[in-house]
Length: 95
Image 1: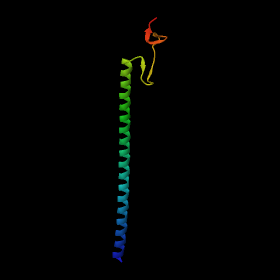
Image 2 (image 1 turned 120 degrees about the vertical axis):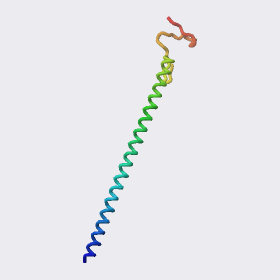
Image 3 (image 1 turned 30 degrees about the vertical axis):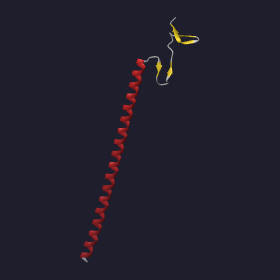
């Protein structure tokens, strides 16, 4: 009778150990997945910010070299102090 009780207790202890190990494995996997997702999101945000800073710096440099060219719309804008001669768009007069 004692052997039966010991075997039953051993089975329950083994089952409890298996459940605890499974729970620990699931928790570890969830934590690893969350950490990986957070790292990927942080890397993507950093890359996007760096690309935006590089683009804005390049646009700022181009606009400082070519102040009359609107790079964002790629449209040429004529400064207000230049009047284009009718029929001769290549000649600009300064009034």
